[in-house]
Image 1 (cartoon, rainbow, N blue to C red):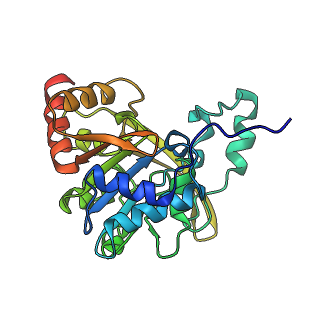
Image 2 (cartoon, rainbow, N blue to C red):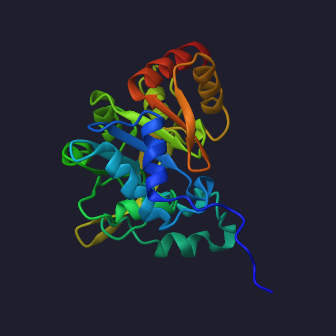
Length: 263
């Protein structure tokens, strides 16, 4: 028996219309966090979403997406999949170092498609790289400090300076890297140590540096709820996905004040 499709197709034209409705304008520098499955049945899949985003900001605008590679970190810190203790030494010994051209991101189908898009540039951080495309892409990705990779001097600092907008496309504030940037500016920031291999010429070495701590479900969702309650964001739908469109500077300043009060 033949199955019948139950969901209406989401076309690139629909995505482009919805992006305009939620406030994405030509010339914008737009940071995108996304879930392809949340958008619905997209005709053309992730490439159609990328085309709609690039069309929405136009030739004068920029699109940026985190391209994190947590699978390049010490396997003892992996959460998904968690490596059994008896395998850690073997995995650690054979773990390939980050390669800016070939190492995929684990952030989802849309960021991985964007990483491979013609004209996209990528910063060189082994764990927290950022991809960008547009007139300011080289500026955004040119430098990326190894320690506190989401803080001052990072692509997120330059995105803040560019008065970027953030689009949460089917995901929550727990996926919003700008909140890590906000916490990095606080004297009360939480920290952790990250460890990863890299090539020093032909020699492979392990590097340890400090970074802002993870926040899976602690403060970031609270900040997001408070920010939305203050009516400082624009909300709508893109395809079938709930979407939030915010000004990065405003969110970062709001979150920094929260961290100063709460941490």
